[in-house]
Length: 225
Length: 272
Image (tube, rainbow over all chains, first blue to last red; front, side):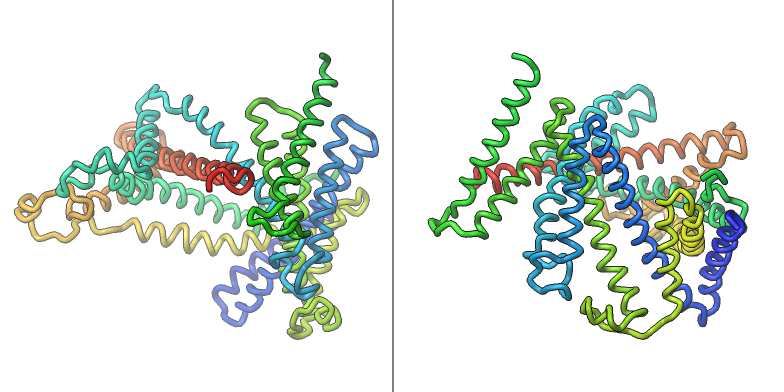
């Protein structure tokens, strides 16, 4: 019951979705299953939210170390949740789009969520710079190739790259850094990406088959859970 | 001066700066009278500037202001995705198929009653059982549905787009605009759209992909011709990683420029 039914569900759903490609009448079923997936994924978001409240609520209740920050998390969570679920200050009321301009939800997105996310990723620019220092030491042939490719790509997208090689005649325009950067992206980079993509595709296909055939069951966890 | 007093001074300074900034930003620059929208806008601009600076303060060291911003981000983003999922998928796709009353309440057009749409609703509720220690195993049924859907969809999708089409696109003509050896050498140039460049591109794509795949083939020892091809594969992959690294750096720097523009223009108004 605890393990057999989930394996049957996985096999059945996977098989139906594969068959829906070959049999047009079953195509509708494939579309419906995709929507089912999205609906269950929403419940996964709820599960994540519930877990967040449970963990941070426990920290506050027990007055654990840094419990004040847990209060900040919960305050941000409930404020955004209330603004979104009740569509507070939404000009179009409950029937309007949740992201309508002027709503509290959109304002919180524009002035808190977006700046925080962008700053968090922008912060990585500094750490990427320090990582570049370590990576860009041409210790061996492979590292040197990586260094040259990255350097050309970076330089090719800046005015300096354009000015530095603008003197090269049209007959040798491939050697101009912006053109060289484009060529690297469309030839060797494409080849490498393609090799990686084909490798990943083979991995995904074999893993999908293992799941559908019931060979792979690790996603069910242990019986103790 | 002890640590806690120093922390308190910094906190008071930050709060004062926030209030001063809010007050200054509340006055419209055009000389109009102060209004509720301008006060609200000033509050949010100041708040956005402060959370941005709080995140950047991590460059000095881990500190309570960074932790505040980090924890706020976690809470806000969890709720954001919950709300978007609720309105776009739950209300947008489920409600119009199971309840005319709720469709009217939420203001979404009712489609038609489809009884089997109770299946994802039941599986979704079962997924929430994960929070219970006794009935947690029931969540496996929903998880099994998610895994089965992912496996079924991905098997076909990856087979079509990432395997068959990528392999097919690798078989490109190695002689492009070919009019004979004489014409090739007489018209030879390194122009970016020239015949030689087009041919070189196709050769690199074909050999590069082939050698890259050989590098990922671990069932045979990488020795001799196979080893040499694998070595070329590594070089191609290194170029790919270098290009990806360059793009990542540019993306991050562009985000940083965006944040600095916000601070100096929208908040401080120094770029006019």
